[in-house]
Image (cartoon, rainbow, N blue to C red; front, top):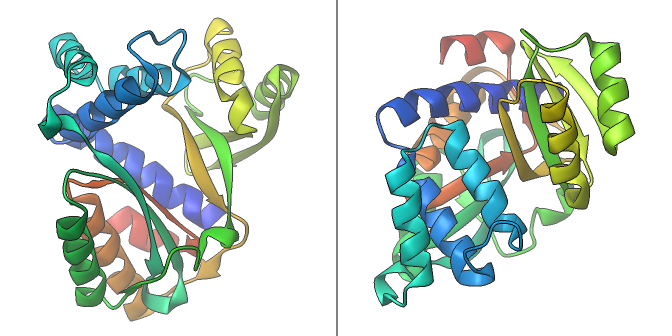
Length: 248
C-alpha cells in the first residue's frame, strides 16, 4: 500500500494547510453533528463522537466551534440533518474510488459528484461496484520524526493490538482491526508517540499503478473531490509516481 500511503500522507499535509485557513472545519463540524445525532453527546459512550473530537483537535479546531457542533447535534434543527452516503466509481486508469458523503441534499450531491467524475475522466458507478476491493481498518499515522525506531514502534503497537506497520514518506502507518483503533491509539499516546492522524478508513487490498497523463488526470479528479463540501473522505486503490506527489 506504499503508493496509496504516500497520497494519504500528502492529504494530511494539505489538510493541515486547509485547517489554518478554516476550510476543513465545516467538514469536521458535519461529522461531529452526525456522530452526536446517532449516539449522543457523551464521547465516552459514543466511539464515533470520540474519534470525531480527536480528529477535530488534531486540526486545532477552535473549542467554540466544537461546542457549537455538539449543541447543534443535540438539537432538532432539520437544517443539521445530514444523510450519510457511500459513492463508488472509477477514475482514470481504471482505479477504484470510494467516497464518504455527508449531505443535506442527496440529489444535489449525486449530480455534482457525477459531474466532477465525468469532467476528470472518471465515472460514478453503482453501489457495491468497488467496495469488495477494500477492507475497513483502523489507520494511525505517526511521523517518523520524534517517534521510536520502527522495531520499537512495531513492538509497542502489536502489544496494544495492532495488525501491521508500514514506513514510507516520513511516516509510519499502523493498521488495526476497527474495534482496536482507540485502544492502540491510547497505548501509543501513553508511550509519548506523536500521532498525526487516527481514523477508520477503507484500505485497498491491492493497488493499480497509474502514470503519465492518466496520473495527472487522476490527481485533478482527487483534488476536485476533496474540495467538495459534501465529500468527507476519499479512498482509492491507486499507486502514483513519487515525483507527482511531491510536485502536486
